[in-house]
Picture 1: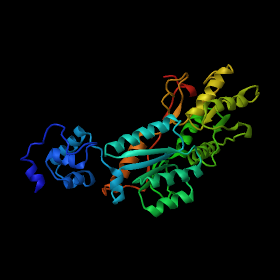
Picture 2: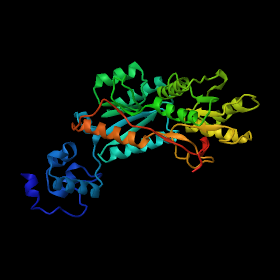
Picture 3: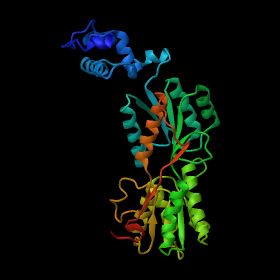
Picture 4: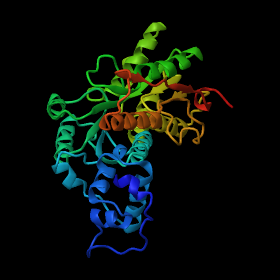
Length: 357
């Protein structure tokens, strides 16, 4: 066989090519001393080519600067080598961690990522998914539980691997990998209650089109109720994941109020940053006058003053597992796994709630 005979042939050296212009598949084949079919199998069915031969082909391709024409392969029913990732926003440190981990894991399997964001607009997500499908992606990952029926039907009809990430629930029809956001909020709210706080305010975004925020707020409210505490309407503050908006919202919550909360539970760390800045601007001490906690454990949460008590969400781990699972499905090497994988969160206690390391 060709692969066996190859062991007796030295790989050709130099950068000579069989034709002018960009190097092609036959140039790689000539460089190594194999047929074009073997090079094609190396890329499309790597397990069918002996490891030594495969390495020589890939080394030769790299030296020649050969770029595989995936589009041509896609027209013949082969993989495009791209996976779509649709996120609510890229203007968020924790989603950046997720994206980086997802991309890095795909690269280990010669697969690239097409990423798009819909700014928490599920109608826009439909257009994004349609555009990705037009580009013949092999698989797709979506963030959260809420998605348009139109989007889900488009994916179902095309029968490509789909996974939802970041939020998970047994009520989901699609496989999911993420955390229990309700538990995350309950953890940090219970921490505040255990410190003796009874006058607790909540600062959360609109939950109508954001299942992660909705679960977190439900977790916080249920924890308050379980401890016999009520949330006054004036302490139920709405603001988006924006530090400036959170600063302004915190002014209305704290400035000139005879009755102010002794603690604020925020929907994520970005909102908590805004609340911290406003509290200090008003001359209040954190945590002596007001304790402030967030959710997420963003990259700056341990560095600000005072450092922020929060719940660590395993963004990198979610991205890695999701990408690996999709790749295994594409390679028909899908291993048995639970339909819904829940990765635990971790309460990180720092100075903003009264703890000084």
